[in-house]
Length: 105
Image (cartoon, rainbow, N blue to C red):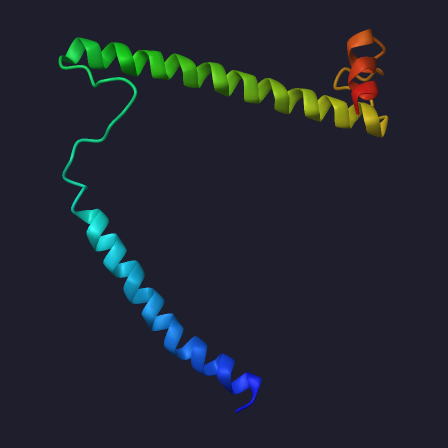
């Protein structure tokens, strides 16, 4: 038998065996799904607590969205400065903040 035949036989036999092991492992782990998930913070029992948690999550997401939006604006401004295109107002930016963006690149 040459090496190619041996590798082909190993792949043909190994693939179903490994698939069976993975299925067995998943079924074994599936019995634990009925248990409550462990988390850092316990879930609030009442509606007011749940609402407060949701509002806190919303504020955190809004802050993250604002940060990502600001980063995208700065990157677009940096690209504009790097290409030498005039700004939306029709003039070249010359303030120090824009120059710092170019230097940081």
